[in-house]
Length: 119
Image (cartoon, rainbow, N blue to C red):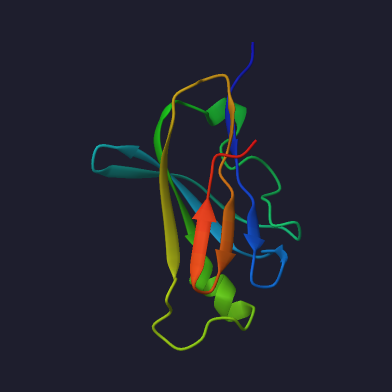
């Protein structure tokens, strides 16, 4: 039987490279309650070494990925003056199919970001 899972990928669009060393947290949302499910750091390809929510832990529902962009931007000498324009980037999304691979990438620069449902 197929089982869903969640992956992510972060690209630094200002540098044109993967965003290595960026910390990401995953939360499950239940109304106003947030339950931390995972915390990982991106590798040299801007991905996590394993799915951020693997098959065995996957459940449908509302989630939030928090990308710690400010720490990454400081470490890569792109931060600019404090306070940073972008520090933490939260993305809330729903997963409704228990048998699907969900992929939520982040395209990041010091002054903007975008996301989409990837494959």
